[in-house]
Length: 258
Image 1 (spheres, rainbow, N blue to C red):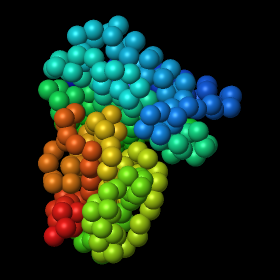
Image 2 (cartoon, rainbow, N blue to C red; image 1 turned 180 degrees about the vertical axis):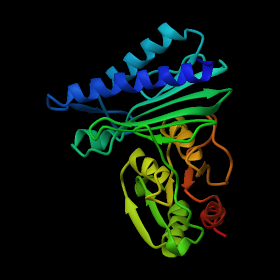
Image 3 (cartoon, rainbow, N blue to C red; image 1 turned 135 degrees about the vertical axis):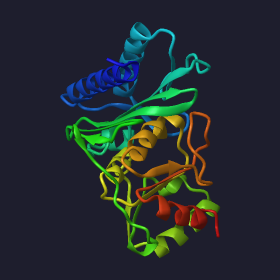
């Protein structure tokens, strides 16, 4: 087995571990606290990330780790695992089944393995550079949609946008066919399967988008910052994904206020 395939097998093991912990937690009422940024956190978020970190440290002690709930480790390493134990914690605590675990592996800051795992619905998207993205082990692809007027656009949380960002996003909405709101990482997964054309967000961190990048790119789409630049663990907080690369150029222009 090549090193890349071995790393992918290990990434799937991490996703299996996360799914098991999350599903087991649903047997009891979900209790949450509020972090300093006013976002919720549960003991399940922390348990998942701690378990995945322990597995990584045991199997790949030389690798770095960037996660949401604990301090980063070895970010100067060539390989860095990027983990969001529960993306969509608000959905999780309110019983909406659109939350998921995001797992990515980066090389010199750039993601090349990505997994979006939705435990409640038993759905998993897996991406790795050089191979076609899969949904529950079957290949998927984004939809070809080159016109804004035909596009479906989504956003996770409009409240995260600044006034200027809101103005430009509103312009984008006015030029597209339909809008959908919420859905956390689930909408990006569905974009990779060809059911959504554009997804826009602000206020994200690398653990929110690294896995999405690999899944979407290897399904034929594109995920960049709002300036159209390739994402890495050092990118900013604004991301936009498109299923059609030609459409993406138009989206970037609108978000830039053109």
